[in-house]
Image (tube, rainbow, N blue to C red):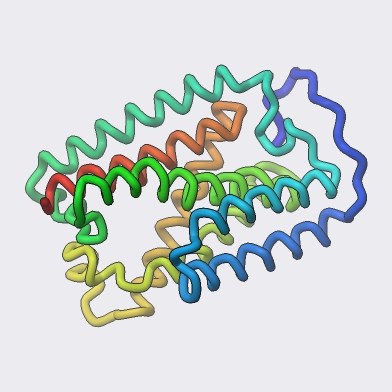
Amino acid sequence: MPPPAGTITQSRPRRVLPRWAGLVAAVALLVATNVLVGLVWPAWAVPWKVAVTALLLVLARACGLGRDDLGLGRRFLGRGLVYGGIAVVIIGVVYLVGIALPATRPAFEDTRAAGSAGVLLYAALVRIPFGTVLLEEVAFRSVLPGLVGGGWWRRTLVASALFGLWHVVPSLGLSSANAAVGATLGDWGDVGRAALAVVSTFAAGILLCAWRRWGGHLVTPMLAHLATNSLGVVFAWFLIS
């Protein structure tokens, strides 16, 4: 996604791959990653995803995308941090209200957050930032939109649709981990979980793309995503402990 109008962009690297080839390679790499870390080598999820993040950035540069195209230019870092801070506050307030209301509190009682304080800290400070947020934001709010090209809506819809599909494998077991989700889906089972995951994360992907556009930098959706996941697991831990 380009920076706001009227700004000076940095020179782009020399293109050695066509963008369509980069897009195909990026999607194939993400599909392989989703299957491998989700079903085969979950213990290696964090280092594997960090490595894949680096590969995606190298691929994007090989396709001629500059730092501004990827949302990584220094010019808008300060603005991105400000907007990201606003997102964190909004998400925190929404969570606090949701937990305070008896009707919505069960939605935060996720047994996947169970464990010791050390497990909680690892999840909130390591697994989520480096095993979830880093790769997903670089892939779906930076590299893929840049490779898709076209207008903002085209880039956003394609990247967000892929973001929704990315969550099919992680959705397995969601009903058993969260009583509210299980009660909502009833007998839909795997199909219901997958459908809920795709639709909800497709919508979340659009919102995160909007946060990047507002902030002008990838750090904005990164902070919003980090707050959503890390605060979610922290609040869930306190509710079920």
